[in-house]
Image 1 (tube, rainbow, N blue to C red):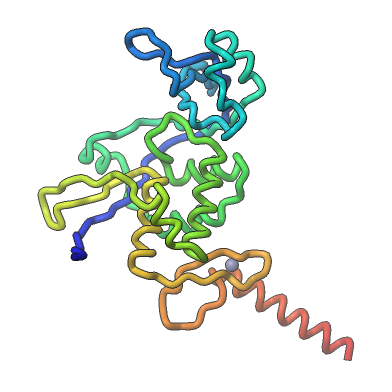
Image 2 (tube, rainbow, N blue to C red):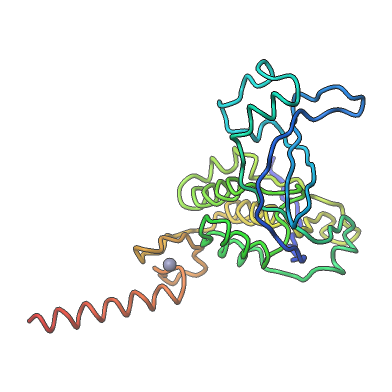
Length: 260
Ligand SMILES: [Zn+2]
């Protein structure tokens, strides 16, 4: 039996200012009873002249490189020394966080997750472009920072999902962002979020469940996937791309006429 459960999905923009930073691992995280938590490290992040410590899950370390860290280093000083070569590039947000839905609604503006996704797919994978994008759209997720590599990974996963491998999307953690909430009015379930990551993942899941059709822009230096909205046979992702190609075509025709 397959049931359809209606769900309202709303993405809203909150204000956040983003800075580039790097993490410096200083030792093992400790549980409240003081014992070492082998699953997490402590990292120091410096932004705007302030140093603050965050929990840094061990699974964030590059796969395979420090798998036996636990055996190699018990004391914090050893961990710090071993991981001194590892300085992941982080982006860190500043600004208020609103956990309460009413508060969130008060301090945010409605935004279109599909437009967000379009811009996200065009994002150049550099810290500078990522910061400009994040400053425009707000919070990434509820973590204290986002690694540049996470952004690039999600971008690739979305690209693959819409152009080639929807099944892999549904098999991955990406497909079901856990932000469902009950609501007193129809449809009684809602995803209300100001998190870019959640909005992006939801938009892809919704599109793939609705079996939306995607194409890849035929402008060779674009290659952007885009959603086919109508039966109309669109070849370009945007008017800008169609225009650039039209100009190029007319130039080519002009040149070949001159050659004749
Ligand atoms: Zn294009």
